[in-house]
Length: 206
Length: 377
Image 1 (spheres, one colour):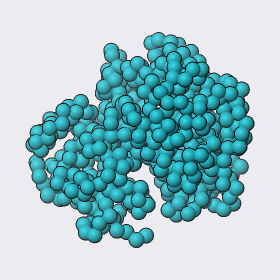
Image 2 (cartoon, rainbow over the protein chains, first blue to last red):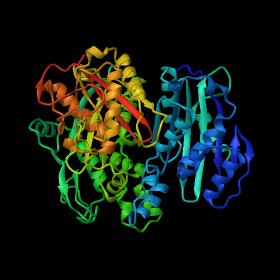
Image 3 (cartoon, rainbow over the protein chains, first blue to last red):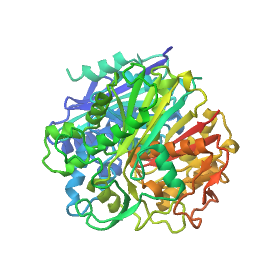
């Protein structure tokens, strides 16, 4: 299929640090995950009180989306219904599921229960940016680059979306990694192919 | 454009183990929702549609599959019967839809890496795929209460784009302490059998079940009902509360109708999400009004099956397909007096009428909405 879809920007938040387009922008101290997420939030000078209510998966994915979208004008120019968020991970919301279940014995926490679905992170990203296009969450053992390429190309090539944020947001206990891609019809950038997705996903962790 | 045909389907619920059995039960007004008092999953009496303790249990020693996986296997097995779909062909894909899968295993305590792997939805999907000897790696959709419809839409797109010829789309969820306590913490559970769209509605019932729909582009199925279109949106409003305007659900209804090449006036019946919470049903009524669908008969099946979560979109689609095959609209159980701000046509009795184009919608946590159109032509 004729592919005019390009990776306009990409970012990573992992134990290696915070990266935008392959450039390290912050080298977070690798101790407690909660501390790391808060440190990144503070380092980026973000001011979004909802952040403090989010679970770890949403904090991670939302922070990654802020890094990804900073300075990207294509987002400002797009209509809300033309921007979508397609994410995946391996362990769904298990990190928060465990925390929620601990509360059930005494007083089940509705504030935690709502986060026991992995697609809440897509909702958080959509709320912050007023994205009203398609959002979806898939589960796979590792980033399924072939499926991501196939699915996002379908959305863009059929004009279901004009801009798509896609990628991987995973957190479980001390392990975390988010890699997001900003993809759109364009004339320059990195061609949106499964090979390039895999290259970007794996390169920075070597 | 490639036509996507419904080859076969199944519902495995407390009301029956085939689509036909379930449809007959509904037609005679039978509900699976009953009062339960089981302290091992909830400290107080509650209303839900649950399998009895002897069904799909794992206490008989050698059973390698959990209840969740047994549900999927039973549903897929029945749907595959009497079809010529070759699951071992590389042209066939399995798509699994669930919200919480094997979460009950977490309730047993003793968390370690083995349990972590066992709970993973991909582990279940692979076990089910291997059970039937699927050639391709299965896909897993986990997107709150629209999971079932999103799985169907994903399958349709993969078929239209030529990646696969056939898709087996199966969804299931189990009602556990985890899920019950969560919905109770939101004070979202009804004190009786739920009443979608009714003035006195007071919350949802939860329900267990599995459902499967098999799709194919193969021309041998020409003449079968088609999955014509599907659309997905996000409210971008609130993670646990629906849109105040219904604008974003309207957006997917409008897109699905346009993609199907039908007008609002061509829609003969709507299978709504209808959870029987105050805010959801109100939002849906607003969306239907925006779409000009006020007069089209609409029902919710939640008072028959409860909210079957990751299975709901599929299970309710199967009943829609059965309704179309029988040209029969089922009443929206639990509805007596209109309780939403927009005048909508909630179905109150069994009605025999030609059903050529039908709309199915769903909405869920995270602000997600989905709509699909099924057509005979």
